Image (cartoon, rainbow, N blue to C red; front, side):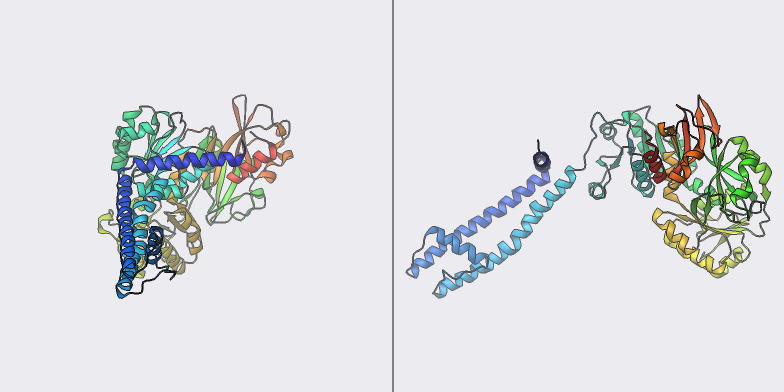
Length: 574
């Protein structure tokens, strides 16, 4: 069958579905009734005017057909007025004025308004609503159910689309559902607290249910889902530590305190304190760590000169420079504020720490601006590292420690000086408002051009803006939460270690069997780095790049999504 015929049939099916959906809605049926009533009144008015037209014309001694009467009435009411039929008497002209005025009112004002209000607008809404289903097909399985739309879910959906992972976004409000559908999201309409909703979403066949609303809503969602399925994994975010146990009692398998994770991650980036490698992820036996180099003999050397692989066995995957991840090259120079991303075994990471661990002379406290959940988590993490800190907070309710907390406006120079900004070893900006964070970053950079500034971004799109404002490193709350959820999908073949940076496993392509990594120039050709080879159940971490790759083995690589695609294209990987 020709494609154009298929398109016609598809459009006809779509149109019939929308008409059925439109007519099933009681408000739509009422709107049609109201529209028909108006049309009946208008038809009656036209008929009466046509009769009066003949009566007045008879008085003037002229006679016209009934068709001419309706013709004159419609052209006059619509203000077209061709002038081929006119009255000569005062009565006829007065009647013409009445017809024109009523025509303007009914045909040019009331009719368009009534048509749009009672038919066109409801029809457009019905079309949109018809595209937002209330259930998934019965055969649906292996999908992810999302129950709340926020910055974390927006970032999560982008990652799911990268992995071609099916998902369904549950929305209870029709207006929001239509808006999200228009933006390209896969939306399903339903109530969050109804077990029937999750039955229609095939929760029993889902790969995961993720809920990122507030603690009470998340608890309700988890408890409701458990009425439908006892086995589907449920991941929830928690605003407070006290909610973690309650959410688990409600049925959650994993509870993420994203604010706590964010605070720890921001503190981990602080150069003050101990220079050591800290684990940020693991796939199979390979551990990925971020290593601070401040105060170590590595500063000022190129990666080739450090000979880290020969000394401790770690493979340097790349470096963080001013918040940007850069694939490492032998000539890459290590700066004081460089953060290395390394991969290796647990023993190799421990050897690095034993060899390069250097307690830093802080010389001042780390200044934390914002005493909310993220700021408190950062303070606790710094305290565990033995790094002194001061917290600036505007709200008296957030003041927990009189010895380290300062009440006041974080944009007030006197408050900043009282907190020790002039001697601060670093500044962490943690407020939950991106506009405020950008403002404070610019302000602090002007006051202390040389100090390290680490900032939190609520929305991913503001990460680049904060870098331009002067932050040395920026972490996105949305990106961190989305990455944590992706890494809990129990996918053994992929691990996200940073924004846009993945560790993934891949069977050795036929094009690489018998060749070495160095001979194939995998890194130069694709941007991916081989950090492990698994053969016969044994993992060789950071393998010799000159050894041939065996058949039926599995590679563990790190790279961006684009690099992974180039690898697939270059070597025909499946």
